[in-house]
Image (cartoon, helix red, strand yellow):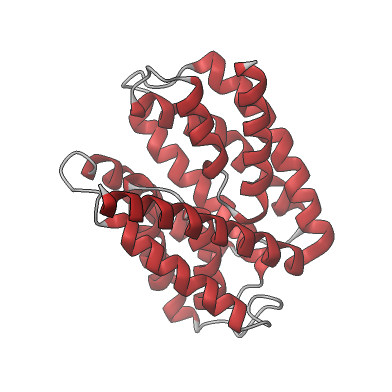
Length: 255
């Protein structure tokens, strides 16, 4: 029954991740429940090992159907890879307690902005001058990469918002670009987790198969229904993240 529950969690996580990010909301708690005695690093290692297959599959499917903005995605991915590893290393000496309230405020701002601007991300906006694209892509990849390595939840959603707000992409193309960057951040995390023995490969590969299945369904629906569908899933994920971070923050304050 535990394996069935993990398979269902991986399926749902792959679907959500492929559309708007946020699959970790499903997969990580499921792994913590299934592996109560395992170190946190093993839980996160299994999550990344399962997720990278679904994310790579979604990126490949998007790439076959839409024109990926490689001039933005590739430098952002390179910076995200380096800084994601740095973020994972920083976990040992930086307190995480101050991160959750900050992320909660950012999520509230992102969600409010998206709701108050109905046309935000529905169609592609004006492109940035080429001289600014590279520097902004590197900066965005560095910041989000470090965040993903250090803390993680909501990375895909933040990437989508940044790609729309800074680079004028629509929701569909922003989601596609976010998958490319997520592959880089997942690979950076695995560069730490694999050598240290924090991946249970049989379990991770089983979950990876269902994660890929979910990502195929999510990417297919996103491509069929376009930016409007991705926008609604994005808002649903953002609201769920706000609820989770809100509950966790007030619980910590009460403690």
